[in-house]
Image 1: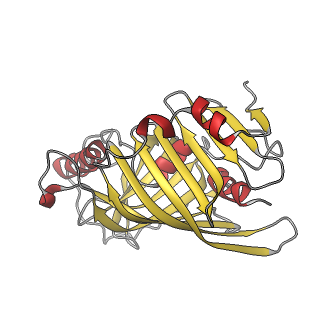
Image 2: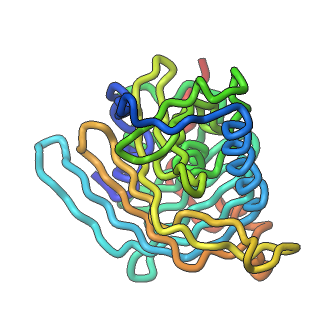
Amino acid sequence: MSLAAIGLVVAAGCTGQRKTETVSGSAPVLGAADAASLVSRHNRRVELLERVFSNGVAEFRWVDGDGKEHFEPQVNVKLWLSLPRTSALRAEKLGEVLLWLGSDARQYWVFDLTGEETSLYLGRHESSGWSEGASPLLIRPLALLDLAGLSRLGEPSAGDGTDMAWDGQRRAWAMVGEGVGGPMVVYLDEVRGLPVRVETLARDGRVVLAADLERYASVPVRGRSSAAYPPIPTLIDIADPEGGVRVKIALDEPDGMADEQPWDRVFDLQRLMGALRPDRIEEEPVE
């Protein structure tokens, strides 16, 4: 299986039942004002992270169809985010581009350049996804935005925090929401209100993928003092519930003022097609 396929299987994932660990009798009291403030702080942080660039590295672990375990370390990545729905991730090793995935407001794409025949996979955000067995390349960049804790949350439905579950193991409040990539559960740390874990869900509530978020770093943005820069996780540890695939992404000094970056080109599908020249183009079936 190619490196690109592995990364995309991770984003598509296998499904498992969501398990939120709660500790009865030890949950702190979360009143209406506290619940609203928790969500508001999260949403304000996301709003300030409107545009972010970062270099980084990734590592991939997976088990293939024959039960053999594989490990691909030290894959260099570049990440461009223009929230809420536009993203680009370039993965390369030894100067060779292996994978380019991205999205705009309407659709997403994946260039798999690892095999003898290079491929481009196209899909719509609102579609139900590639059918099982059609292709291993099932990634949805919007789900990656959710997993990185970069999607807004709706206001608590009851206004009093009763729809937030306390997770005593993580010391965090878990709230179900609708991310840009679909249903999700966000675990907000009780101290800083930052996401420490995000689970993307199937429509029936099963977990598709889970990401643990660590090593928050402040991101320079215009109009804010350095003491008020919004934080972003720089270690994103993604896995499927069965443990068959795992991807770690470590970002290095994310920047919200990277004007020198080619923002007009990295989200331009036609330009990317001309530069990467895939041998084959496959479009996601539309129901």
